[in-house]
Length: 479
Image 1 (cartoon, one colour):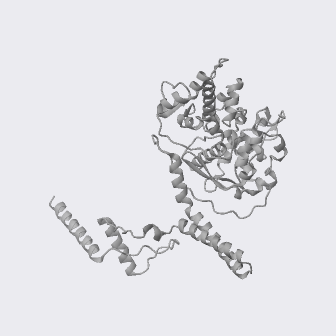
Image 2: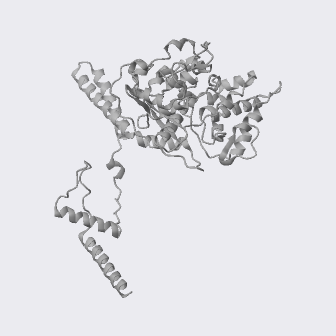
């Protein structure tokens, strides 16, 4: 597991001008979260129960997951606004010169060393520092926070410069949905570990750790109750000395056994209720977004946020949830330079078009029912309004309803060209079908594809193969 948030906790902001600039960018509340010792066995036991198909933890009593509400409460990041994505098509030394005022001597792969950021920009500013210099120091502090706490990668001591253009304008940066980007990144990294593609768990592990302590019964006892003064997020209350006198610390087998036997009353479904009045406004200003079923985007990463599968975390009764939309997880190859905002739009539109079409069909049915009720009424305005509504729905239906026939209308379907081995295998399959049903067990996959290859080509292919085999036998016999 990758965690190097301790280095960022040692970078203390004392200049009020830099603090104000960090606040404009939307990271001031999150910057007050300090390093805490992580319970690695507990996180490992949780990852064992992570299901990438649903982005939830599967327990004995049901599902639970980290939602946008948890991100807002624990980290104090904005969860509403434009998604965090951009372009990789930049010459990174020039971009560093533009936004930081100075560039490191070497930037392998566009990465900046965290140590260089801290040593270069942690020095005190002069009293008459210009606003440009103040913003440059604020950007360096935010970049260090991104690389050490929010989006740590496998390099363990670097941060990629692709985040720099997003924090170029601090006011625009403060309007982005950084909380959803942090959650998408954590979802993807947990899925990689669950699929055994990565051995190290990355992402905002402080979020995962505090979530586990807030909701599970496997939590230490706080030796000091930190008072929330409306300026710090909820995760800060765990930045105190803890005592493991009730649960043994860092025992993987114990954690796994406890999660296997966990009862429904041992889960804290609504742990934040007593603290809502003592948190900063950014933690509680978007309650409507907490239960939004939306895609979470972070550059090339797209993950689904499915709070409808964990409604008990919002004080509601759990119903049978919908099937989670399948989004293809494409790995970013090294050296790629793409406009990720365009790529994500194409991938998401192609993957979700069926859901939009189904929704339009449902609305069309409602419009038809409304039209019938309007025609049965006596007032003419209702019928006029219903007819207009129906025409609008028909136009949307025509624009969004993409079928297989529409995609291939007027196009010539290319003919399939088979190799000799493919023709030979298809000929053997055809002979088996003519001889009667085989003795294989039906796997439920349905009948095989219909035979479309001409018979004379199959016969010629077998004849050519037979002649080659006889010729080879004669050559081997002579030798």
